[in-house]
Length: 322
Image (cartoon, rainbow, N blue to C red; front, side, top):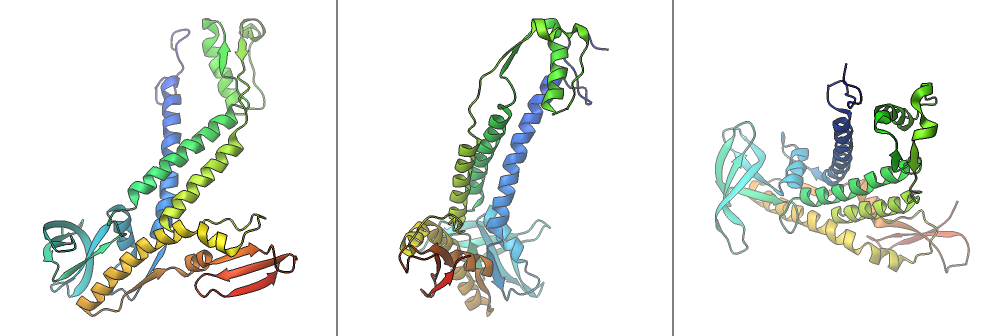
């Protein structure tokens, strides 16, 4: 039995104050990890690799490019196959600042010294940098807003400060935990003294969750733009012309090309050096979603029409809206 007035403890024997602190810290961590995992999956799943020699794993390529910014393609005569490994760069640079000496290595202990004459570096983007730091940046911004939404929503039902006698503190904490847990009934003794010794100072916190959610969506869309994923909202009833839609996609398309063209250039060098026929493209679902826009027609006929413009072919089809 603890002393009268001592802080309650959880099942691990820790003080409840510590538990509440770590519970909040864990919620922050889980939220950040959740958004980072979602952005990582999106970043890794955007490209389709075709004709990769077995047993090269395209997921490993995208994983390494996302987190390290580079991988190394080579042929191992002892294994009798082409391989993709992690790479440590060293030695002199050529005219275009590409390292000549490369050390191929793998987590299973594989290690081999290579050069620009028998291997090709695959870079993640034109800056030759990983995507992970940027996605970590956005994940942290997202969890910050997300947790602020939680706090704002909870503030709609809870006061900020409760004033009571010190000898009632433990009883009040137990009552509040039941209240915070949304229990339909809260039982207390007649001697609890809630009506006489307790005051609640309400802050009347304004409801800002809707505005915070809008901010969260803006941050999310900014992250998608960085990855080169379309985030144009075609469900809104705003009247947009196709030129406005294309201009709004400028940053998305530029970011997309940075990653795609770098991969294609590296693949071209691989095909020349090793006689392969590898291709890399955006997956069909991304290309279809990104290159076609459904836009409400504001000028043609004055009716409820939907203009669909394909940015690749510049063709335009007009369909009746539902």
